Length: 144
Image 1 (cartoon, rainbow, N blue to C red):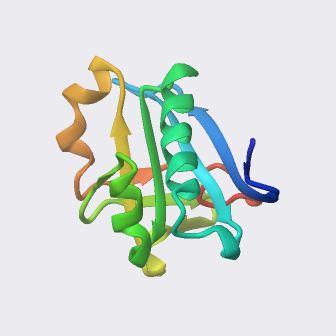
Image 2 (image 1 turned 135 degrees about the vertical axis):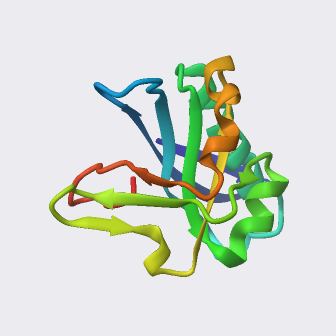
């Protein structure tokens, strides 16, 4: 999903890709959505566009019925996402790839951020801190 913005006569595009995944056959399973990629044109950074896209992503996830939104980002971007309403989950690792070829986020300088939307998700929010969360989205978008 792409979010185009225009400022005066200059056009800049911020792109965001959102995924939705339902956990199957697990007790207390939840529907999670995540950000796979987010890019802001270098010439339009620090103008609020990226923050707007990150906030819109959060709102879109909730509107689509996700119990929670969760993703990783480079550690230096943590404050940016927190400013857009996301919460840092210290020590939490997302495990992507496949069960046969896991791809954990802690092999990089990544942090995990989330937002808990539903009452069901809010009840178990503390369980996500420091957890290793198996997403297994496949080989193409390994973490989302």
